[in-house]
Structures are given as C-alpha cells and as structure tokens.
Image 1 (cartoon, rainbow, N blue to C red):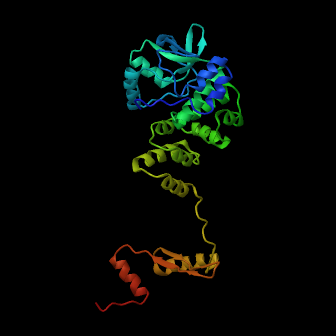
Image 2: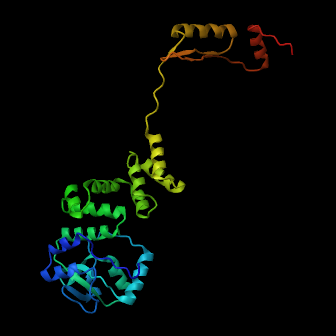
Image 3: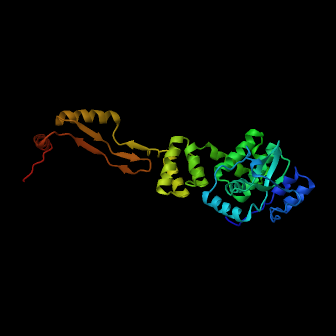
Length: 311
C-alpha cells in the first residue's frame, strides 16, 4: 500500500551477514528505518535503475495490479525508501529482494534506486528471496512450492534442510511441495485465489487427474467449502457397501423345477424371487411374477387361479 514500507524482517539479517562487510551489516540492521534515498549512508548505494536486472531465482511471478499501482504513486512522491537487496554480477546488479519496489521505480521513471550490495551464492540468493517474500506473505502457495522445489532440485537440498533454512516446519515444506503434484489447471486456480490450499489437499486424495479437475471446477462453480468438498470426495471414494449376508428360503434345484412347472401350468413366463433369511434372523419378502400380453390373457390367468369378478 502507498506509504507503507516493511523492513527485511527477522531472519534476513543473519543471512545478509553471511556475505556482507561490517559496513553493510550495520546498514542491514537499520534498513527498517533507512536514511532518505538521496543521502546514502553506510552500505546503501544509489545505482542506475537500468543496471538492476531480474534474478533467475526470483520465486515470485504474480503481482497484484492494484497494490502495485498504489506503490507506484508512493514512489513518485517519496522515492524508494527501502533499499533493494542486490548482488554484483559483472557490471550489473542482480536483484535478490525488492521486485515490487524495482517495478514501481521503473514505472515511476526513476533514474536511480537505493540498494544494499551483498555477496551471495545462487543458493543464498534464492534463500534470501524466498524468506523475504514469505515473511511479507507476498508469495501465493504455488510460488512458495516452486521456490522450495527449486532449492530441492537445483541445490540438492532435502526437505529438512529447506525447512531449517527458511524457518518453516518440515511438514509445511512437504505439504507445499505436494501442491506441485496437482494438474496445471488446478494450480492456476490456486494461484488466482479461486481455490484454497485446503481445497487442494482434499483434491490430492484423488488418484485420477480427471476427477481432480472435475471436482475443482464444481467446487468453484458451487462455492463449496473445504468441508463440503471433503464430504463429496469421501462419498465418491468410499468402497461400495458389501451386500448383506442372506440365505434363500428355497433350495436352488427346487426353485428351478418350480419355475418350469409354473411356466407350463400358466402357459406364460413366470419368475420366482424367493424370500430370504438374513444372518440376523430377519426375513426379506419374496415375489411371484406372471407375464401376460393383453386383457384376454389376463382373464385366462385369473380363471386358472380361480378368481372371478362380479363387476
């Protein structure tokens, strides 16, 4: 929001110290309340905006347009009050933290921006960028998961190691990484805020990607809560009820013989559904079905069973 500038946050100072001079360490501690951009002090430097380049390790890819527009307005009036965190790469300054501020500065047509230059490996740069965004709650769940995946794949870090470096519980890292198992369409819904992480966890319990996609769309269309989606998935995935144990009250051979005899007796198809006895002793009624094709045949059958109507 305009006029609101947040410090690097707890945990970042320790990371920055790993690759800074004593001067820069002192500046990093004071960065939450920096000196005005035009009077740099300590490790804060003014560098041309054109020399600051994007980082390949930036975990964040989506930015709220309204929030960014407010920041641009603030930057146009006050300048960039909080220095960007960068590392020198040749003649350029590769951004580590401060993507929104850099975008706002470019949009506001600023010539220079304040920066703090640190020495950081690729792994450290990604780690700092992740922590900075996580502490600001700037990353959506998919971006967070992709950041962890990059640490895991590019730098061969275990989930335990990632958790320790970013100050998260191992379970949180593991659950975040599981989101990347979802189909692209569902990940897009999460990025756009149409589905929550809670919805995602429920969908992950399904084996079929097709079912996941169908239920994701239904959850969005019907505005299903996580609990409602859980009930729906449980209903779809629970095994069918076992048929009740039962015993026919008529032996099979006798049932077959009786069916044949009644067919001959009535001269039409006959079906016998015998009564059954359940294991708990309860009875299930049976039925006798006799086919007829028209009223004349019905009258014939009624005569056979001895029925007569006075109507």
